[in-house]
Structures are given as structure tokens and as C-alpha cells.
Image 1 (cartoon, each protein chain N blue to C red):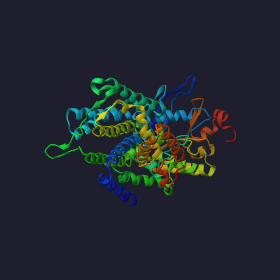
Image 2: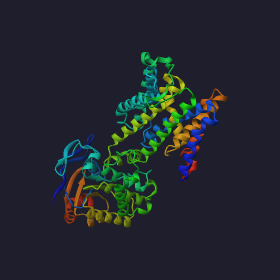
Image 3: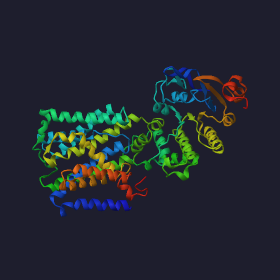
Image 4: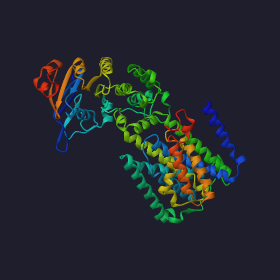
Length: 250
Length: 311
């Protein structure tokens, strides 16, 4: 198995508070990886650093052994890294279809086209239609993104994240605000997309039942540091993780 | 189909305007067309890219002064207008490079500051701009391409057709831009900068493009003014002039293609009518604008759209 992303002594500090500290992490291609930990553990900051949304104060990040530490998010997307956000982040005034079309156009380097119509971009339109089907939003394609239900907006955000055809995709709490049945549905969809699209997904998730049933690898964070990582069975048995985060019932 | 027919009828009516309207009506129509071009450009920045500029009058003035200077030295209408637009485009590209690094109120304040710097230059750089006297005696030079044709622009009707042609071209190109992939990228930035960056789009690049195109539109509106008025003066660059496309766009509708055009018609006509009855016309206009903006948050065009005005 190949390392798709690797960090060396990664750190992000807000004043005296270490949001992420000395993180040495290797993410393997093809492994469905979950990042878990208590609130304030640094999970979202870590994803912000890895996706280029924030720049680290120290350390290095390598994507397929190419250093990307100082690259902005747009350049990382072009290399094959994508993400979704903890707080809903879609294009609310644009239609659902346009929400998906734009990242597809971006991937095909067609956004500089100033005088051709959006509909004339046949390849992009076709791909966007396909992705809409994959995330079950075909029937909503003409509705404004902001008018969808919370669950559908989460699906739309997932669609936007995969529309750039990423090799590595970070999903920050992709099922937050959903009921348990919707959660399972969405995370099973993620798993399906992972195998169909050959995308390596890294998710932050709080529902431990889902995490342990779907993940191939789990990274546990606490106070900005990686506390433990391993297969679900190993993490379940790890006494330190149980003491700090999981409790005894898992 | 209905929309296309309506547009065709409107264009025909505008083309026939000189046949049934007097000189003053033509003069008003030209000013409305100029404000429409000015407002469309502004709305590419505001309605489509989410950047509120208070300095567009600066680029309008650059276009106007650029055209005026060219016409005073080389009396060719086409050269004057194109020259004014090119200069305004170059200035907006340069200033845009500095402004688009910031957003929200910081962007607005930067554009206001640069706009007022241009106003100060127009006021103080007497050798170039004529200072507070402005530039006068600008000829309405003939429209000519040497060896091909030469049309006398002295009659107002002829100049009206030139402005109408430029306005139609500007509106058509604007329609193409906002419905293109580039237009979609700009709308993405308006809706969510972070999301746009995280799908691989350079936010700064498209902000700069939007800023420059808006500057070109302001420059075009400005460049079409000197041949009409024969004079250009510093108030063209004043921030209060920058407020006109803002108000026209808010009146017509920010998030609609036709909003700035409808708003320009309303704004100019309201202003033109009220000013005849009272010296407090600005207060009256202000009250009307406030009522319309509060009453129709989506602008006047929202009354005619499916979604209604109170959304």
C-alpha cells in the first residue's frame, strides 16, 4: 500500500494554544480512514492544514512525496485533494446542478471560458448529471442549493467534494445534523463512492458505531496530538483511548 | 421565446426613438443608456462576484478624460471611445490588483479611496485635466474608418445610434459573460469564497477579472459622455457619482440580469422628474429609493419574476 499523504512534525498554534502539535501522520491510499477525538482535539484544524485552508506554523506536508506545505487550497485541489466542511459550505444561490457543474468545470480547466454558455460544455454537463445521480439529487437539480433540506445539502456538499475527481478527499463531519438512519445512508454512500471512484476518504465523525463499522484505519487525536492510530479492533482495545475518549461501552 | 420577442420589440422601439422623440428625449435616453452600461459593470462586481465597490466613478472619469484628451488632439470618435475604454481598463487592472486582496468593508473602503484619489488628480492635475474647469470644447468628432466610411456626428440622432450600438454590444457581451463558465466561477466566489477555492478555482484571479471588466464598462460609459456634453469635469470621479450605479442596481434588482438596466431607467427618470419640482430633489429621491428598496428587496424586477418581491 502507498502513502498518499504524509506529515512531518506538523504544528498550528493560536497564541499559547497548540491546536495541532508535532503530528507525524501517514495516510495510506485506499484505506477508509477516520479521525476521531473529543471536541477541541484538533481534528478540524488538522483537516484545514492538510487541505490548504490554513497554513501550518511548523512542519511539512507531502502529497505523494511532493511537498505541498505552502500551497493554497486551489492548487491542492488541482493536485487531487478535496474536502467538505464541518459547517455547511455550498453555493446557496446557485442551482443544485450549477453547484456540481462548477467544480467539474474547474477540474476540466474550463472556468476561464468567458463567452461560451455553461450548457455548451457538453463533457462537464454530462459529468455533472452523473454525479447528481450518484448523490441522489437528480430530482432537485433546478432548485437553489440553499433551499434544500439539511440532509440534501449535506449530500450536495459531498457531490461538490467528489466533483473535482479527487484522489484524496477529507470529509469533516459529513453526517452532522442528520438522524441516525440518514447518517448510515450517507456514510455508506461515501464508502460506495470510495470504491467506485478509487478515492481515498478521510473522515471526521462523532458516531462511533459508524466509525468502527466503516473504517479501515482510525486516527485518535487529543489536545492537538495524535494519541493513537491503528485498525478499529486495535483502537477499541487501546486502554488510553478508552480512558480519554471512548469510555468503556465500546 | 417570449423574452426574445420582448427584447426585439424593445430594440426596434429604441431604434425608432429619433423618429418620434425630440432632442431632449434623445438626450435623456443617451444618459439612461450610459447609466445602464455603468450599472451593469458595477453589478458584475456586486451582484455576481459579491464585491461592493464605491469607486467605480473613478474608472468612469478615467474613460471620460481619456476619450476627451484623445478627441481634443485627434478628432476621431472611434479612436476616442476605444482609447478611453483601454485606458480605463488598464487603470482598473492596476488598481484591481491592489484592491482584490481584500474583501467586504476593506475592499469597499479601498475602492472608495482610489476613486477619491482619481477625483483629486482630476481636480489638481491642471495641466492634464484642466483642474476644476475641466476639459471643454470636446468635439463630437465624426465616426470614421479612413477609406471606408465617415459619418457626421453633429446631429444628436446620429450620436444616439452610436451610443445605442455600444449599449447593445455591452449588454450582449455581459449576457454572454454571466452565463459562461467564467460567470459561474464569479457567482461561486459571491456565494462562498472558501468553497470556490476548495474546488480548485483561484479566487483572486476571478476577482481581478471581474474588477477589470467592471472598470472597462465604467470606462465605456465615461468615454461615451464627452462627445455628448462637450466637457468633462472632476465631479465625474466623485464618490457621489459612484453611488448612482449602486442605487440603480438596488432599485432594479441585484441578482437579476436586467435589474441594473431597469433600475437605471427608473433612477434617471425619477431624478429627472423630481428635479423639476423641488430643489430638495435629492431628499425626495432618497425617500423613494428607500421605500422601493425596503418594499422590493429583490428589486423592482422581482415583481415580474416568479419569486416575488419580498424574498
